[in-house]
Image (cartoon, rainbow, N blue to C red):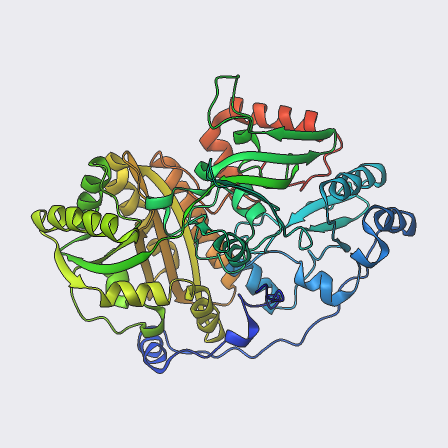
Length: 525
């Protein structure tokens, strides 16, 4: 049964009904390490009135219908920014200056195209909006030079358009949230297998536009690797991509739009590879004496073609804090590093893969910890953002950042980023890390940071993150593995791709979006 969409709170993550105070054990740990400074709720502030002229609003209504162009404060507030800690700090301080002037809700590709035509004619910046889970500033458009900002809310585009049981593909509209897409596919006996931490609220279009990577990427693949076809609305026309699973017909233009963050076009349909629903799911834990030993074991599995569906390795600090089980933060006493391994599929295939992995991990010195750690991780896999909000309520700044590199560079990257964060956040501060996306040639590193909020927590975090981003680029790593570029990562993105790469992106942008109305200020250096 399809459920009514729950809107996330403007100053918190997720379902407002699931917001809660810190668990007692976690609060005790916070008091011991940082001290608690409970923050009062800030009264809701009125928004600046919309600046879009009446003629432009009428044209938008002509494109999508009068009932689907909204300018009330409540709706605009819900479409303001994303859910990074800086986004929430600003909102909690009453700063919603980036609110769009109107929220426009098309229902078809043709209506999206009509909105873009109105935007070009009336000089309106357009920000495609899927689930609102962005964490790098990708939902904040540049206002300068535009007559207003429109949030192009894809909430009405939620259909499963086609299923090919022979080729094992499905075509979905971009506004479907993760659970909605999985529910529709489950009725067909299928799954995408894409479950990032944002899954409960993030959308199909957002997964593609940001090159999302889910917690089961070791088994199912990154989202961009699952995409076989796209339909895109651009200011100069429609493009349909994906005539075959692979081709040699020039550069793969699908890759141009994957990761483009709404700056080159609006994704109106996404065709993905799907799998049969798994009959069995088994999650277990393993202990390793060190992060390096666990990482080496994961590399061995990846290069032997033996990766489980899920594999995640917490470093010593994250293991001690017990972040793999957000409901019991601070409750882990075992030394070393915790690895989570998960297996999904048919019973015989799961048993065979688990046996093969167990033989390898045991031979490398791993200690099996049974299914309890894996089941706890599985039960709480989408809960960490709620814990972040509870810590913000207590005056503790918590944020995440991630990167990726080749195996030979992992130690340097881990050490340099951790040192940069520690140096800028001072004491007391916690810098935790885990590996959760793995390839034959390398892996991602996902850092979680906790520190006492100072007089200006936003500025303090921006300085620390800048230092960490500098360390990533200087170490030869990427600025982002799956959080995307947005506005926040643009300076380092420009360094990563170099001047020719910047020239290429600007040239494509200029030709596809000559008026520059698509998410201006985002991604393109």
